[in-house]
Image 1 (cartoon, one colour):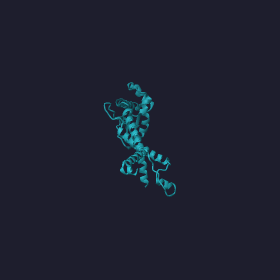
Image 2 (cartoon, one colour):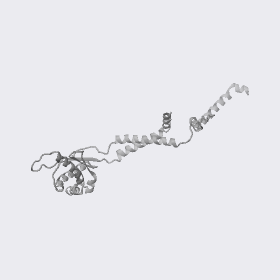
Image 3 (cartoon, one colour):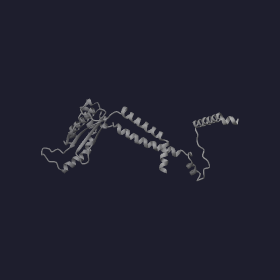
Image 4 (cartoon, helix red, strand yellow):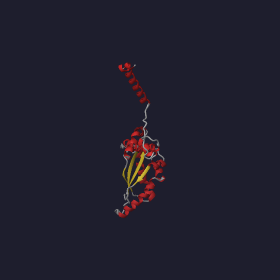
Length: 251
């Protein structure tokens, strides 16, 4: 019975649920297609290796572990003013300040990995690729002066000629999320309105409210259209009775 009552509540307010969902989906679609600036991400990969030096020392577990420990320091060094100011100085055509470069670039690395991934986000992929490549080159150039060790190798650079998809543009997913969230909010609003409505609408509610007191009569609700229709029917019936021969005879 409770499930049927829930269904009746939703059925009475279906228009409100549909309106909220349609408005939310429409707003999301307009925002996604017309008011979203695409953002692109370009990445370059660096590897941290202990320099073999003139002796040609081979890599072992100790040197690899040391390189992994250095990565945490390198993540901070890359975003420091020492590197970013050098990038701005050597690449003035980029059109970005040092703090803008530091804010837009991110550095990540997998656990127990010597590979560092530099990612730069911009509204132009070509510009993002040029900047991330410039940061990689300057970092590789400056790290021997900062750490007194030459252990950075560029594994891959971003390709400025590539045409990747924006990272913030997925209208199908946005519409699906908007549909799901708006539907849940609309259903919750309908149940809230029904909970706040304390009027009695049915015989069952009267019985529940009056503790099983028997109902003596039920007054139906009639609209103005029903009253007009009833009046027309009575007029037609009177006309038919007045035109009959039995009516004339009785007169």
